[in-house]
Image (tube, rainbow, N blue to C red; front, side):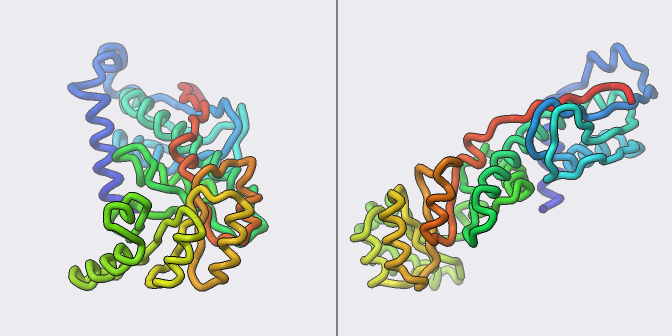
Length: 281
């Protein structure tokens, strides 16, 4: 975790919500008031964001006493208490909504990630997230994916070459796209892994004839076709499946022998778990 980036994010998020001040709390609550509070779970899933909550509240009140009762990545159920704290009352109310918004979102992502991971836990495949994330919250959402037991793929356009269908069509053909990628990296002193997307077996054979990649991503392949494609690659390159994969069919895709399965739904379709911060011991 990039803690400088995390601190900057917390500062921006608090500024968005607090603005010129929490006038309701300032009006109602003495500045030196302290309160006990706890995080009540009102849902079933996987918890994520406790460590982040502690950082937020500690930023607002360095004298906070924070007791973690359930760790990030653990299963939770209705009625559980994730943490207890004693905090300056104004600081607690200032950070309450930010903490809940982030923990509910992170826990939703961790929960769906955990369900995907469980479906294939006895198989050598890895479930990957994608770039289908909320702008400026990618590092938070990818953190939650890992807490749920899945794996991070690219963090942005900068850390891998991924030649997709639009790149190939705009460039002209598969061979030219691969050659151009190598030339670009050589000219710019880069050493990045290359993934290339194929849409059918014809394109797959073009990639195999050309080489020069690390991973071949089969996009929207039906399961029998994917199985044939994985057998055709025969371990010469890493293989990845994407498109149309959900909790009900992910195991069938994994049984084809593919190395990786990328699932945008881990982030773009995750719901939020119901959590609540309650004043009182």
